[in-house]
Every structure is written in structure tokens, then in C-alpha cells.
Image (cartoon, rainbow, N blue to C red; front, side):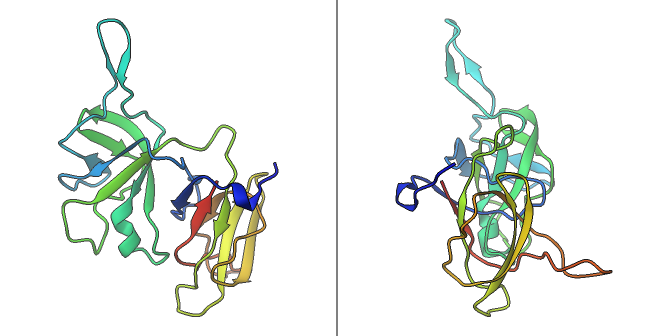
Length: 197
């Protein structure tokens, strides 16, 4: 796959996850929660169910199981200054979705209304992204980033300077873990990571 840096057409903030690929990158659905329930997304404005008219035409695509939810309010509270991500596991109703992990409410975000975006999953034949790395979470300039390449290799890059666009095509940026019990450090401590496609 050849990616020309002059041909990026989309960008998305990166949610660190050891299991969820960078989704989208174009949101399928966006909104604001109306109440906060663990492992649920609740939005009383609705629109989560697919709607088919009398002629068999889809008038509202709705949300599908397997799509990815980003809690955008988490950008203000996570250590990496990025969104939290979860997978839609069930469409409970037109106004409520069940999620794989609890991302609503985000700790430290006091409001019952938190912005979210819903993206297509990037799983079957993962799309590749170039990522731009921000500074380290501890305030130093260089940061560590743990990625899964488009070919499925897990690579930890240390000492990445802020503003660097990695020379790798990746499908995921992982949280990783600090060095322990004979295992090397793989913990991503970069902030404000963006993916370009």
C-alpha cells in the first residue's frame, strides 16, 4: 500500500485500545447523550434503529452491531487526551445501545450530556492509517507509542518527538503496559495522537 502524505483526506483522534482498531474515519452518526448509564449509550433524540419505508427503501441506516462508539468528552479526561472507544454489542431500542465496555460516563466529565460519534468498524480488511504523535503524558517532549501495523506486527517505538508522523501504516494504537516481570515497556504515553487516511 502506497500512501502519499499529500493525499490524506480524513483525520480522526486516536482512542488507545489493545483490541479496537482505529475506526471510520468518517462518523456515521453523532450526537449527545441524554443520560449516563454504565455500558450503555442513551440518546433520547433516537435514530439508532434502521428504518425501511413501504417500498423497501432504507430511509435511515441506523446503527449496526459491531460499529465503534467514541466518547468525545473523554478527550478532556484521558491520560492520552483522546476519546474512549467501545464496540456496539446490541441495539436495545431506537434511543439506547449496549456497549462492550463502560465509556459513559467518563470519569471527570461532570455533565450527563457527553458528545459521541459512531464509526464503522475497521476489522475485516483493516484500513491503514498514518499517525501523528503528540508529546509524552509526563510533559517531556519525547513519547513512546505501541502500535499494531497493517500487517499485524506489534511494535513499540520510544523517543518519538511531538509532531512526528510515524513512517508506518498502522491499524491500531495500543495502551500497552509498563515494564514488569521480565517484559519490556510497551506503554503508550503519547498524547493528542491523530490518525490520517
